[in-house]
Length: 355
Image (cartoon, rainbow, N blue to C red; front, side, top):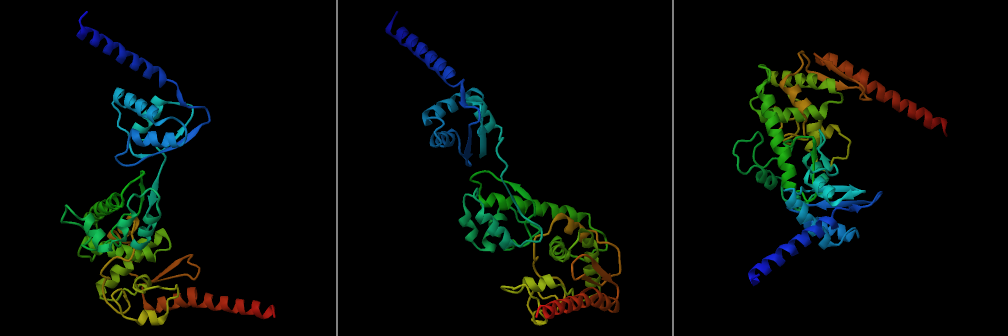
């Protein structure tokens, strides 16, 4: 046998021995019954991250995990997916890498709630432990908005604006996800939904663009205490717009007040600013909150009616809609002023009784 043939023979025997050893070494369970570990795989992570987590938790040496990963990833042609994985014993190496390749991780998510503002979403993102680049949120609203708009010129929302332009929903996360990806999902999804609803709007809707629908939907979202009120509140605003009446919406006034303390006064209603719909006609120039699909649908398909006014009961249990100012004034007295006076009398009597 020549030296070349011997070398080849030794190489084949060696490779076979290594393969056999690897196969035997990694067929057994890596986790015993009742043993649980948590593994985080960030974006563009892989076997190296699994090896690091398992070694830090004293489950396996890093070299063992790397060899096992190399074996199973190549043998099964696997692609490990980013995420957080709770691994419960008993579990073999093969089961471990198959689970990670299938993306069967723990549910991680973030929820943007209807009626919240961009600043609320920003703080929510900053506090999320899975976000890899929270410092990006320190940029201005205009910078972030225009970053999301890159690559496409035609959007429902104008440049520089994020307020009211993100779809309220629950979004799945994975470890190391970027702020840009989360916001891009919400921005693109909202744009698509608004366009779809705008195409189906009623013929008598007195709005000129999808963005005007977004602005009015944000007002409806903030004004609606009950789901069934949305369509009627939208109709009130529509009727007022047609008649050239000011919208007189308290939430728009509040939006324009810096450091609002929760107490809306007559002085606030008289103080002119771009969001005061008591002093200015028409819609405010941006949304005042995030509106969900229901509010958008309410604006696109408002309930039929001749209402021009509405007022909520003092305890917010009902909303009363009126066609005339006289009816509205009676409703305000009956459902807000009188209950408030009765409450003050009751408090005073209790206070006097305790003296």
